[in-house]
Length: 218
Length: 244
View (cartoon, each protein chain N blue to C red):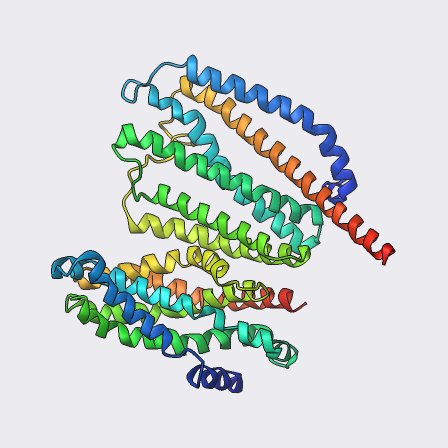
């Protein structure tokens, strides 16, 4: 498992892995927002938590098709499936690698980009915390979507259509934590719900992803 | 004699073929009676005026929009567990019908919301979760359309249907938390104190029966089409094989 994780991380970081792409995309979305809604700081600080969450979610979505597509094309996925490691474990590791290369950097970058959008000071901690809790769910749900569509040629658009509705609950609770944090309100309820969704996704969805992979590898 | 006998395509074709004309007739009767009764022979509501009559389209289609997904969930489970092809094809056949009912519910809701709430659309939990349900239908149908091998497609869409069901319910409750509603609560529950008045209730009941029958008839028809398409494909393959 650790070898697979290390391999995926190395592949992501070295040439052509697209490691920085998600971060760059996130930066561009945040930069474009004031162009679209105007540079009024009051408006920006009002929508900052939502925009940051949405930007992180879309950046996460962009890199999903890399999870299985390359391994599928060169046959590495068949080798992984025939190895002693259960496919569920492989799916979980793939999701973890995706989170380490996408979700974690996005979480760390979000407070910095929050400065650009004039995020109110109390919001920084809760924004980072909500992303830290929510992005694992995004990665695991995305792994499931990627496993479903791995056999489809140019399945990126199809995967977005499948994955985005699945992101709804995570986005609602995550953005709610960030918004309430920015407005210095009580955040316990959405925070608990977000953590629950994230934990449940991490615990259960690798099984669904592995089931989909088995069908695709048949 | 058990339910599983209808998993045999030939038997399914025979029974549904015989049942369909009766189903269509009953559907037409129910819809004609229910809609005529509802539109022309019920009083106007004292506050809503004649717009209340949208209820005869809105409520049944909303009901069927949800129940179609429920039926797809059951048939997907049957496919995954017992691998009856008819079951998978019925799920495939039900998706566009359910999506259309969902769309009808959204459209009639907008038409009703405009005079009553002064807005076509409001980010209310009920409205929004219906929109999300519609998106789930779109994803499900897109996945069916994208995969060529029928068994792979059936398996993957079934898995998506199961996972999607969990997330649809999750979204529903997340949305309740997210925003306060404008839409009224359930007013047709059997156990509630205050419900829709009987004058509106009886024609509505006939309309609901009509929509259920319409759904069943459409799903039968579409499943039969799918089975026939599958047979044609098999025949073509056989012809190609013998020619080669």
